Image (cartoon, rainbow, N blue to C red; front, side, top):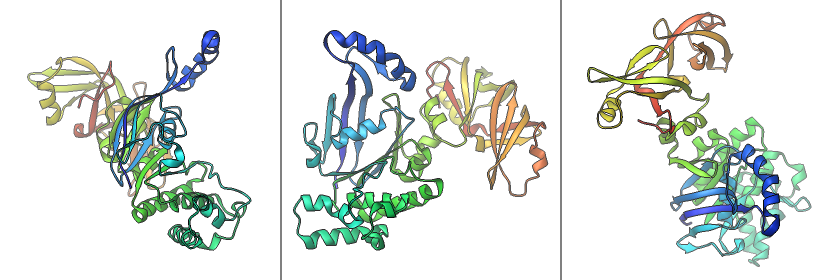
Amino acid sequence: MANVVLKDVKKIYPNGSGENRKTKKKKTEEPVETAANLQITDEGVVAVQDFNLEIADKEFVVLVGPSGCGKSTTLRMVAGLEEITSGELYIDGQLMNTVAPKDRDIAMVFQNYALYPHMTVYENMAFSLKLKKLPKSEIDKRVRDAAEILDITEYLDRKPKALSGGQRQRVAIGRAIVRSPKVFLMDEPLSNLDAKLRNQMRAEIIKLRQKIDTTFIYVTHDQVEAMTLGDRIVVMRDGYIQQVGSPQEVFNHPANLFVAGFIGTPQMNFFEGCRLFNENGTFFVDVLGVKFRLHERGQETLKNSGPEDRMVIVGVRPVYLKIGSQGIPATIEVSEMMGSELYVHMDAGGVDVVAVVPTAHMDASLVSGGRQVNFTFDTDLMHIFDSETGENIF
C-alpha cells in the first residue's frame, strides 16, 4: 500500500530529429490535431501537460476522459511503460522516474487480458511468483486465495480459451492480486465486455477493492465506471486535467463546459446567448426569452464580482427540467423509452433540449411527438458558464 504523487508531469512524443524533423512534422501534425487536439510544439506532440495529482494510500482514483486525452499515457508513465519527459513521480515517497517497471512494486491489468494461452488459469496467476522464486507453498496459497476472492477456483485447471470474457478478466485481475502490489493499475479493463458483464464486473471490482484494500489507479472513457468506482475522479482533456473531485462534486459542480457536458447521461442542456443582468439590485438571467431570478448563492456571488450585464451560457441537466404549462415554449420531437424513464427530445426556438421524465404514473400522450409544451427548472440546479472562457461562474 502506498501513496502516489505526480508533480508537473509532462509527456512529449518527439516529431523526429535532425534534418527530417520538418518533413515528419508536416506528415503527422494535421492528423494528430484533428484526432485529439493535442498541442504540437517544436519538441513534438504533447500528450500530457502539467499533470499534478496526489493519490492517498488505499484511495481509488479514476482517470476519465475521451479517447486521446492522455489518461492511458499517464497510467503507463506510473507503470514505467512510458518515459516521463519532465516532472516527478513518487510512489510511497520514493522518486520513480528512472526505476524499472519490475522494481516499482505495481501490478497492471490491461484491456485485452494479456493471458498466456498455453497456460492454465493457475499457471497464469502463478507465473510472476515463480519468476520471483517464491516457495511453492506460498505461490499455491496466494493463487488459491486470489481465486477464492474472485470466485474462479473452479476454473484453475482450464486454459483461457475455455473461459468467457468476464472470466478471463477475473483471471487477469487475479494475476495482479497475487503479487500484493503497492499500487494496482487498471487500463480500461471492462471495455471488451458486453453491457451486462460490465455491470457485473463493476460490482466485482468494488467488492475486490474492499477485500484487498490497496491503492487503485483506474483508467476509463466510460463516465458510468468513473462515477460508480472512484473515491475521486480526474477528468482529462487534450492532455490537461480539467477537474479533480469526488463523483458527486464533479457532477454537481462541474468546473467548466467540458466537464459539465462529459459527465452525466444524457448530456447537460446548454443554452447559449443568455443575458445575465441586474434589475433593481437583483440578478436575473434571460433564457430563450424567459426571465429567471438567480438563487441566493448566485446573487451573493455576483454582488462581489464581474460586470453586472453580460452574455453567458446556461446549463441545466435533463433530469432537472420540468415539462408543464409554464416556462419556455418547445415542441416535442421524439421520446425514447428507457424503462423507468423517458428521454424527451424537444426543439425550443432552434435549440435541442432533452428532459428526463419518470414513466411511473405518466400519461405518455402528454409527451408524444409534435406536442406543444413548456418547460422550466429550479434555478438552484442551474449552472452559469462564462461565454468566453467556458468556466463555471457559480
